[in-house]
Length: 318
Ligand SMILES: NC(=O)c1ccc[n+]([C@@H]2O[C@H](COP(=O)([O-])OP(=O)(O)OC[C@H]3O[C@@H](n4cnc5c(N)ncnc54)[C@H](O)[C@@H]3O)[C@@H](O)[C@H]2O)c1
Image (cartoon, rainbow, N blue to C red):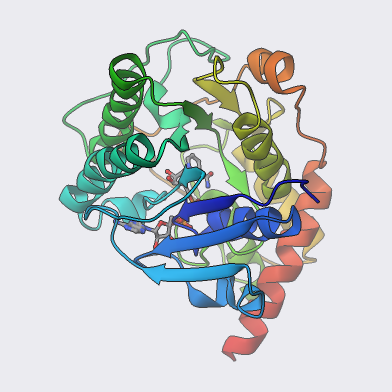
């Protein structure tokens, strides 16, 4: 429990990461305002928090200004999976850019600290491995992922300009692949996709030859990093990479999930989508040094917890 009850705004609070963050902030003794337009977020993600007198929700789109009195803002609102952010790319860019302007404007007005959920996608298809924060990336500004990648890059620019121009207290983290319960079952992200297909006994669709690697961080570890970052002194602005540096080939992940679910699913290979990075792995030296943080949940433990979430979810769909 925290000694001081803060009023904390979480945008995108009904989403995957946001709902876990709201849960953690309430457990720490804070007063939480969850703001979401429910584009990809769901009320069921936060329904268990409704009974708390310190939890409040507001249906609101961050592309419109918001006037509330808060001490801290976590800006997570933005669809995060390609299927969702490419559904309405203009709205995705608006959410990142106008949403950032609105949250920074609010932070400036009420003198709140403001946290930005940026992404490893700001590195695009990286030519440097693992990625350190000073790597400037390799993003295609015209491709189908640009609405998300460039939107998040522009949001970072705004955060640092507000900091330089208005001394706004900013905290920018670059999130690498995160997984866990409450991921959207149909978002096409590799972990949720594989688990749902394995549980249904359907073929596991693997894009490319499966040798491309990813590094996956369990959601509770990620939320711990967020809270630690918000708790740093004003001189710490980021950007700080947060994620799991332990790489695994996507084919290996599919095989592990088949084993953990006792599934009869086979692997079906498909062509790699445009601009899909072949390798993505964080260098988390800075997070280790500044936040004394590193992931603690082993992949198989996290996968088992995620699998039991999806098994329960799919059983209620029948
Ligand atoms: N999960 C990951 O692996 C990952 C990796 C990198 C970055 N991130 C970032 O973390 C944040 C949360 O991601 P997530 O995985 O929880 O995704 P998510 O889609 O589950 O959550 C995003 C939430 O934002 C809400 N939202 C979208 N547009 C909005 C708008 N205009 N106004 C208000 N609410 C809006 C959605 O309804 C949803 O609840 C995102 O900003 C994402 O870019 C996530």
